[in-house]
View 1 (cartoon, one colour):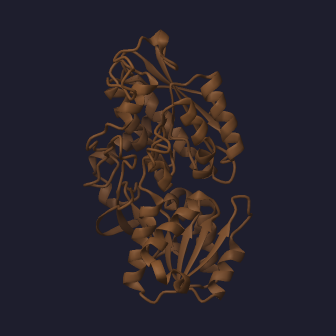
View 2: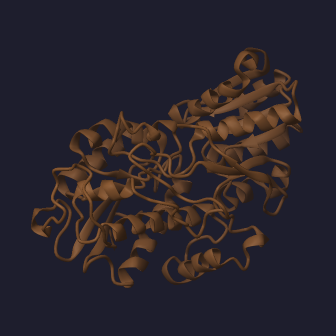
Length: 404
């Protein structure tokens, strides 16, 4: 478990609030001194979503890399990351600690839809930048509702729309079984699929949910098989995604199986499930898969591998979470660079919503990051992919999202 990590700094100007000064002295800026910028984070280093804990470790390591390269305007990032166990009450406790005791300049990459939902109102009342949250809930794009909170990855609603269109193209008369986590994370997929299926929803879809405290999802899968479903959509975090793959195989059930892209990691899902049991599963991607031979000589992925070797040698090179942590933190580093010598909360937020065609090296070719005061969905494109038994094989065109 990580409690505190020393890590990064950067540069830019402009004010999120027009009255804010262009340059703010370190002594007057929350979370900033002459030598450091304090950035706060929560991660599930323990609990039911602990497979995601490696993302926090990759975040920390990437900030360390930036610190070693000189930091930002003479300052280095002090990355303070606390374990919340994927428990919303614990997230509230830890975020209050970060803001009120550690006095961080901003929050960054806090993980999980339920945890972030528990803190979003408080964080926005405090006007603390809440940047690149590690969840694709569509609501993180609601810039009017919470102007200090912004996402990074594609919206779950957009992803679900893509899956629904694919299912209709492959099986227009499908009987769809939808297994989802019973919270805002899971419910976004229901909403996205309803957008496409519309009046056919009731006829085509059988749903069943699970709680993160459940030991297994076996009974839910048995019920969907019993309902005659020939398509299974699994909306689950890694532990339950791996369980689903194993159980479907054990039941000798052969549905068209679609899996949320937050659980496609080879290291934390496919290998524990049994890679041969997952052959043919459909998902989507926006980032480069570390197990895909197509990226063996990719400059961006070679940079990631060199980073892993030096800064996170214990990290799993098959775990896509380590690619994500690196890529999102590079985006945060770009924001800090744009901040110049003004690391006020207002300017950090302003720069986070001023990214123009940022070419993050771990994103699929053709996908770039854009934000604005009215666009809090930085990534809006996806590509479908199929599990071969050894890696994910992409197919079809890059698909543009439609969420707002």
